[in-house]
Amino acid sequence: MSAESTSSAASRLSTLTSWNADWSGLRVAVLGLSMTGFSVADTLAELGADVLVFSESAEEEYARLLPVIGARLELGTLQTVPTALSDFAPEVVIASPGFSPTHPVIRWAQDEGIALWGDVELAWRVRDKVVRPDGTPADWVLITGTNGKTTTTQLTASLLVAGGLRAAPCGNIGVPVLDAVRDPAGFDVFVVELSSHQLWYLGLSRPEGEPSPYASVCLNLADDHLVWHGSAAAYRDAKALVYRNTRVACVYNKADKATRRMVEDAEVVDGARAIGFDLGTPGPSDLGVVEGLLVDRAFLDDRARSALELTTVADLQEAGLAAPHIVQNILAASALARSLGVEPEAIRSALQDFRLDAHRIQIIARHRGITWIDDSKATNPHAAASSLRAYPGSVWVVGGDLKGVDIADLVATVGTTARAAVVIGIERGDVVAAFERHAPTVPVFEVDAGETGQVMNRVVEIAAGIVDGEGTVLLAPAAASFDQFSSYADRGHRFAEAVRDWIDRGSADDADRTPPSL
Image (cartoon, rainbow, N blue to C red; front, side, top):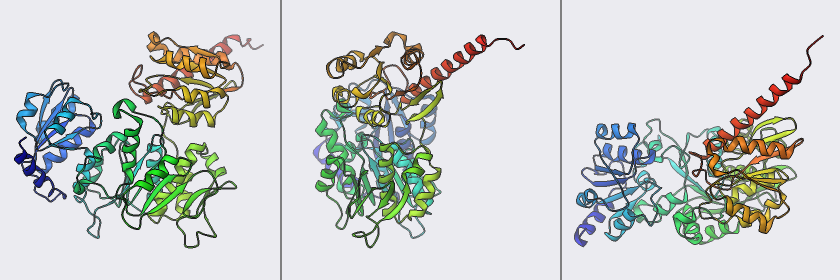
């Protein structure tokens, strides 16, 4: 684009801060046709924009619906800039989160001076499509972190609903934020889970496109997605954007110095408070744990001398929510909910009914003294460390696509507590080498990557042979799943199926050995 065209486009985009603004004819190139990409195209088409979607592949349903809603689709490689894209001369490019900063089309857009948005910026600009009875759009609560995002998002939404607010969990959790914003039912609060990829795109926003959340949290920080971001520093900087422009409560993890520094460095709205949480005794303006009680010393008048009880560790234990990292998620969610006025009684009641999703420290079975646990969602070392600390002495099923992250520190710090390790995935060599260097006394067993269809059957067979009595087998891979499985959920499902097959075979063997009745 010429400098004059770029200036004209920027001037127009600065006015597009409402659903009711004039979006007609705006030339928008949408990159990617996943669930997020379709939500972007659908929104823009409804607004009257000229929408051209570029994708290397497309699900049949999305491809069929695009012309119905008034958008067009160009299929083909995006490793170079398509002629159709440059000829289209978009005024704005909106990319699905999978497009990294080094992607050729992203670099082209930046070099050409074309505005580059993610779906979250578009959602913020049109957040007033459905308003509350007082005429204002819903408040936003933003949640990120290396681990625990989805659980905390679900928890926060559940607590808000228990407190009488209409709350919608959305974003990286699986419901595009644009779908939530356009829901005619209307909400009081959007609880938005943000990946580091989505936050990176927010970092490109002009002031009028920057969200100003009611409350925000970064749960923790550990190396992850380093290939996508290019460095640990870039990943950290993206996560820190969650606090930008926060109006009321910046919630941070007192046990994670990086999140404290993020809050200290953040540009927030005057009057926003820093609210800490951890598993220790809380100070004023914190949430924490005292003698088995989860308490709030942040949202009460006499916080210098008293605290409010939220729930007990014993009650969480009964609900399967007492693992230390889950308790941290509960404290973070409670801080966010309390900032919006939810009473302790409502929090206590909601936690009694809350259950974790599948593949998050999920007990699959207890059979013949062996407890089988699926934490396939532990897709990085930080998450796996939390699981290993919750279940020390377990047989650890580990490995997969390490995403450029060095697993050595994990093995050196908590891997040494494992009874044995069963290593899966295409990067088994790096995992085995880490055990040889840092935990040489831990027995290590490899499952060949060539056995993809039978990986989990071999895992269960080996693990059962190691335990051979009382013990725990923990699937906490510390790696992504796409090297051998379609998703972390597929990996967890296959593990559970293999465990059930093993139990069924054992039951059949027992029946064969039972003597006939006299």
